[in-house]
Length: 281
Image (cartoon, rainbow, N blue to C red; front, side, top):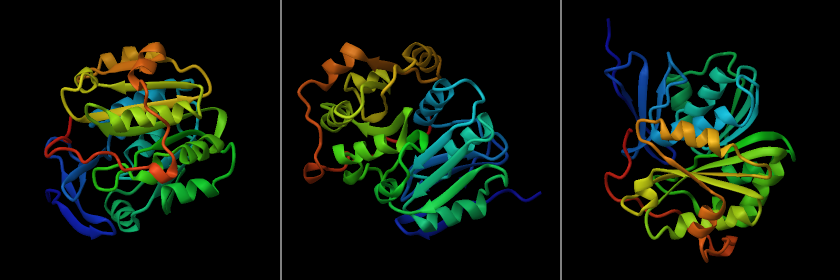
């Protein structure tokens, strides 16, 4: 039997590499310019290897009754880990994936194909441009996991962008974003301030060590106009191999402090991570 071999290809925004996992038969790690982007197990799409992906999965599990189909817009595609997860856990969901790197999409479809009945539509486009053309009140969830290299692009950080996301969401919808920062958290605080200026409810999921400023890491931002089930989220994230904390309410307002919402003209990308900051967890 032939062992799977790595696939390396130049895509639109760098060099993509698909590396087989020797411990899982049909599982693959995607990196772009050596930065880990996604992990997919084709035989077990509900397996979420990365810490931040598990946290996004916990939110997706708790924002509606188990198994209920959702209309989900994914900004950023990677190896389509979360779209596969939603298709497996919420059959019948309609999902759109917007990925700026057409070459990367083609690589993933070729080597890690989606099930024929997955209900996932792929769009090679800039996330904000596609969002601007999306119908109002058309999504139950918007998931933003967009990184140019290892940084969130500046044009996906402003109040104008947050308002577009709110417009596309239905009244009970939820916005999720995978962000990354380190103390003193200028970027993360500004993002929370930005989304607090548009949405009535906010929460943040991150490891205590990250929130205490001990290391660079991911943080998942949640924004909505309805109360979020922070109790269920706290229980799930605390039980992970790498436990996380859910911040909301007064604690989150204290964390935001004097940070101001970001205007388009002032927007900057998220900070460059230090070497070795990202890996599989």
